[in-house]
Every structure is written in structure tokens, then in C-alpha cells.
Length: 129
Image 1 (cartoon, rainbow, N blue to C red):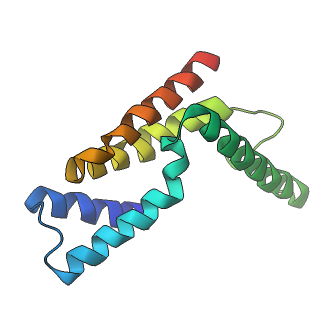
Image 2 (image 1 turned 45 degrees about the horizontal axis):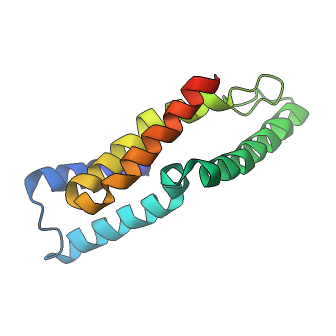
């Protein structure tokens, strides 16, 4: 679903920046707002972001524990026995966060601060990994 919504957003933005005139464009913009809210913690100051990411990793590890207990293969980045929190966060930022934040910043330039914060958070993980 992410790829579908984000792809539609990028295509529409490339055509025209006046996304407030048509109902379909308004719905698309609102869908992007919801997606941004869902991942917004990566664009928060480092201290807040680290609290959130720690909780998220614990959730991932719980899923990995469940998978292991069922005898399933443990999903990437969800294995408590082989933690790669920083590597997972950097990948998530590279492939999801930064492209989405940059695209929103293109439409709403006052949102570019979130790109800068996300880059700072990404640099933190690269430093500690």
C-alpha cells in the first residue's frame, strides 16, 4: 500500500503542484498526511526519536520471538539474537523516510525541517553501528 500511495503522490506532484483543487488530489494528499503521521517519529529530535525507536525494536523483537517459537524463520531486523537496530533504521530512512519526507517538502517547503532532522537521526545510527 505504501508504494501505491507514494507512487501516485509522486506522479501527481510531477504533473502539478496544485493538489488542493480536485477531490481525488485532496484524498491523495490526506492519505500522504496519514502516512507521514505514521512515520513522523523519524523526523523528531533525536532524544524523542530514540525513545520511539527503542519501543519499536522491542515490538519487532517480540514478533521475532513469536516466529521463532512457532518454528518459523525470523523476519529480518526482528531477531533478538542478532540485533541490527542501526542497520534497520538506516535502511528504513534511506528507502522510506527520506524519499517521503523530501517529497512532502517539495510540496510544502516549510516541512523540510523534518528532512534535516531525519538526516541527523540517520547519522546517529551510522555513527553507533
